[in-house]
Image (cartoon, rainbow, N blue to C red):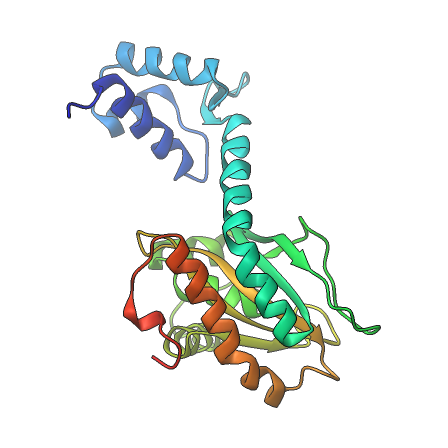
Length: 255
């Protein structure tokens, strides 16, 4: 089946703008996508009309428009619906707060929450955001991010990137362990008195799109208890990944 060339070109422009951390000028966009300025401007104007791209009136440079957030939100709603039955099973089995956290730029945001029935519990609000690299969910998201993306996130969060830096070595060691184990846990971080364990959720292309999380107070979710919960959390993440079309045998529990 033939593709529509103008749509392909518009999509390439949209991805170019999305993947840059600064607004881009017309000439820069034109050169990057290999189109003349007139064609590029016409496509940018079309994308502007749908609010997928917007132009800074002061600099005349282009950045993502508000409609992109609507598309992202719609996708997350689909992910929530697909994930909910598996999260509910995990919630019933653990009787702890169960969450789904998704990456959003330099942050990770909770898009689904099933609160614990315990009187003493740790329940974040839907939409609550943290820096993407912190906590158990952050560890599994960073563990499977591309190298360039990891460096970009560290740099934008004013964290060191030099490989000989002690903090960088600690973080990369933590992320390596999360890749090898298939999960990560945190105690007292990012919130004092809370514990969490998380496992990565992948889409059909093998990209990490979320983390399945169990969290609660550290007086109940001790290190030993978190490790006991690891197989159930991994299984839930694997089931959601499979429902999204991911078919990697390494996701098998205990693999």
